[in-house]
View (cartoon, rainbow over the protein chains, first blue to last red):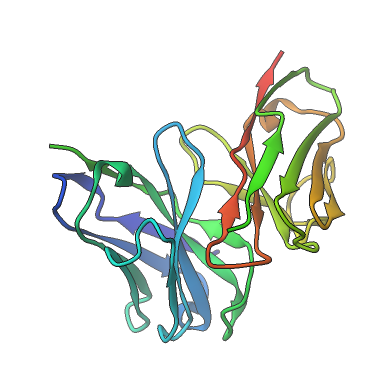
Length: 123
Length: 108
């Protein structure tokens, strides 16, 4: 079955960097777009970024544009989120999620989601 | 960005009750809406996509309806495992994808 496992979260000081990973299995990773979605403690869901199946197209939420970079390594079945210039408001559980469509980046829902990794930005 | 407003924000109900949650979009989104269920400490789980299509494996007591700006998620007969927070998400226009603020369904 499809499985997504995030890692790389932790406590980091404001202004520092962190890289999250999402290991995928159970499907042809290189055929699907992938997303990052975050959830601040006790809050709702916020979409962060999407990358196309081949990495050629990337889109970001305004709140992270210019600071976060989404990437993927299809040879390793792994999705990444490089987070720079972190702020307190970036504190959240970060989920990776699979896009519904293969070989095309088109509007869709997210299914399934990983279990999430917690990022805490604090001095 | 398209804004989604869910109502109510919280709801108390009993096992066996019929429950309806509403999601209103700030502009028309056709049928490009999904519903998710999230339990504490867990990832969201897809229930409904394309406003009314039931995801495989999801019990038939869950149903979705609506198009344009107004949508509903209905649980026909609440079960103990249904107490959770529910989110709607639009995929008509991106970036960004947007979610409703959530509806917390609690046991009465």
